[in-house]
Length: 185
Image (cartoon, rainbow, N blue to C red; front, side):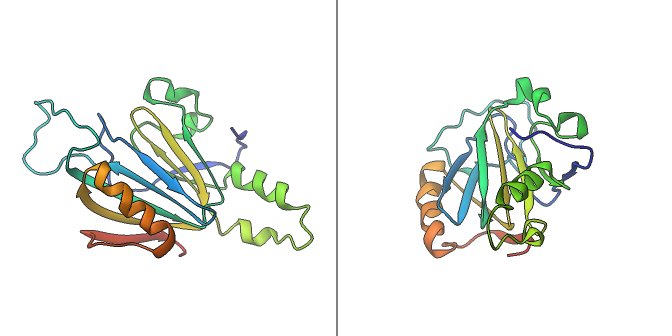
């Protein structure tokens, strides 16, 4: 994990669909150029939160697919919601069950310093990048990328996985309910 500095600032990504608080079942696929994250969204409609619904990889639910263009690095795993206060950005406003962008990111600064030994190093390229964090119930996804594209859809994780793999090489497929971009793509 990177060490944060005084400049790191946590900003909520309000336009990102809220993940299911109970069982988002996040999945990540990636190649050298992009990472794709999918998760189940909070139910919409008449659900009032007073009943329990069991979901699994074959449950058809509202979902989100997040495509990170030119994803330079990512982590996926710890911390979960029970130990989230151990994340270095927790005291800056990062909390479980949300999506965030870290402005003035120490992680991006660290990556820029690592790259500075390259003969054609261009520090300005690094400041066009975005540091994103998606905090789920049992895990956290964190990456540095040039931007993201959000697709709101529905399906099971079992049916979304082939779509995600196709997106790695061809772009998006299918008919999304709503699609929009954050950052430069």
